[in-house]
Image (cartoon, rainbow, N blue to C red; front, top):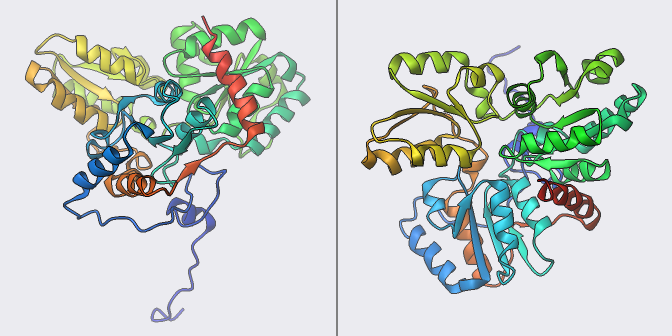
Length: 392
């Protein structure tokens, strides 16, 4: 090959989705975001956001997920995890517009739980979730066929993590299952095992495994991992029949980065440190940590921690930095568990230019970035969500 000859390299559809340059409403990876955004260097962005939000008044309600940038979170009317925010939106029926500073599946949940009179807006439609995209409706339907062929579908109850698409939530509702959060996963699994003999846990294998083994006393041998990229999930019918927990091969790209080495290293660097991690981390990280819990649990634990205590936190970096700054005055030393920077790249797509664009568009009467779940999907997804809300 002549080295001077240019290569005819065409971007793949997936690459274009990751760049947010193509449209696929069924994918969390990326959806084209039209419109002219303000320049990120515009020194007036903060004031423009304030002015647009003030003009909209009570017609707009801005939700900010804990993992959002500080520049965005300052405009949130409420902050929280994904399900708390969706419920907060439903509790504000007077708000015509719900601007969700989070990712795609969160905005879908808000659309499902809010009234038809409300419109949910995601400032950047390319803000997706890699975990949610690891389970597509087609893959899960094929998995259910595999379970049926093994003769166990009738005794298997699907439990889907909140971090899943509306399609997966709808599948869960159709098949008698429920949704869970990282806070109530134990209660959801207790309920599921009252309904059947086995659980198909979607899409985060780590939360499913950690809840079953750490919280419910199961063994690692009770869990198998279904890989949608292998025939029959890479499992035999006998393996499926013997398992109690059938875990989908999915994970969080942020929490999956933390390792046992991360824990060992921080204990050497910070003698006396308390290691506090999210249950989406790998099982060996959970086993080596001192405390394990949801995002809300992490915040409450640090709030109650004594002055002078040391903490290494295994969750998204925006939140860890915010907490470190919040509690520095109380003498609490809070560090990120890993040495390397670990932002959630899709969460960080919601930046100030996108937020300003969304708010100014709404203020001028144009709805941009609207998230709409179709009625059939919404019906069964809401059924699964309602089952979660009814958990004791």
